[in-house]
Image 1 (tube, rainbow, N blue to C red):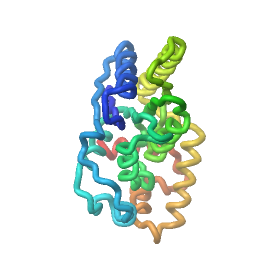
Image 2 (image 1 turned 45 degrees about the vertical axis):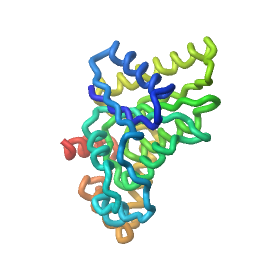
Image 3 (image 1 turned 30 degrees about the horizontal axis):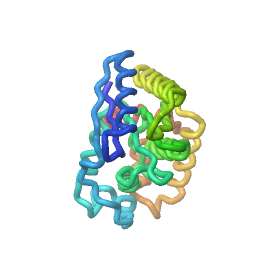
Image 4 (image 1 turned 135 degrees about the vertical axis):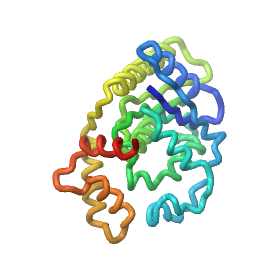
Amino acid sequence: MKVLVVMGSPRKGNTYRAAERIRELMEARAPVEFEYLWLRDANLLPCRGCAVCVAKGEEHCPNRDDLQAIVQRMDEADGVVLASPVYSWAVSGQFKVFVDRLSYIMHRPRFHGKQALVLATGMLDTKEVVGYLAKVAQFWGFEVAARAGLITPPTVPARRQETNERILARGADSFSRALLSGRTAPGPREVVMFHGARALIDEQRDETPVDYRYWKERGWLEPGARITSTCRRTLSAQR
């Protein structure tokens, strides 16, 4: 199994240590290869807000940087960990730039059939950031197999350490089982999102022709199309 960790932290702190603990727990179950993508080191320019990637296609983006190489690494992985510390009640700046630059994938999801684990660490609360990361992953097409939010104050009490370890163990277990099974079982949220987007794309075919063509080519606009069948079609096309 190949797992890509998209690391939104600028340093090897709590978020990195949590990701490494997940790796250790997963390695105890089955062979797994962890690879880190440090957004701090990537040449990733801020989004210009021109919407060219949506209107004409991502290949027309005026920013020339590492974005498509990053997308390729996500394509090649069996699963992805989206990891960020909580900064000012949100994801880190590096991670938000990453999400903004991939806004076109929310129109043209490409990761159906792939699993994701979302991870956040923060001093007081991680619920909103974990929810945000999960929503982003779902709009990109991932099935969110596990969520892990850790409270990590400067001095972590023993009880909190035990709680964090349980959270990581559950997350690693769920993520491992999803990757090993090779099956996707989209939940109600993913199904609703797929069919809502499907109706919108069909309705706005003249306004968003690139989106319409993308969905049409994959058979997602056919009568009776279901999200479970699109997973297999997308994976076959990518391979």
